[in-house]
Image (cartoon, rainbow, N blue to C red):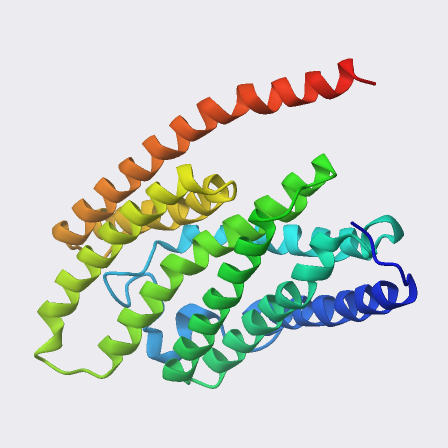
Length: 275
């Protein structure tokens, strides 16, 4: 479905692309790449790979490259004249831009050593991305390209942020440095990761965005397991729970893909026959 007034979506798409690219550029430049400090060395190192038992190994953060690339691709995609008035993009555009802005704001909170406020921003970001994924799931994708640019980008983005929110929460609680919390947080971390794995595994089958959300979370949980078994902050309990969660998520992901690919191929062949 397209808008009847082409000027309105054109202006919205232009402003959205401008705000989005500015936020992406700021997030990239101010995260220690050009200026500022890296996340690992900010907030007294609580978000470093050895900051808490919920932190993934440093290699996990390479996921930001495809996420940023996907977000940049989406900003260009929704800006194209043929996509500006599409109902899907009109619905998700403000939420998608908000997610990019919130990501930049989260990094700014880290630069200012505001770990508590960063958690608030992270939770807002997760809420916004859940809204984006829910809206995408209710819409018909008229372009196959949307499956990769829109679904994959925001699904993987949400999957990563869901696990990152757990890590952010544990980091903030740990920073309070209450002795009674130390052992409790290890147990809470293991339980939260396991429960998240079960929930995301179930989502894989119930939502068309589920496989992408699963992929983003699976990457994060796998690297948490690696960090707990091989990193300086060893924890067998968290490592075991993360490994179990990752295994369950991987089984759900492979099973869902196995059933979905033949259906997608059938749909494509069906469209070609009717041309």
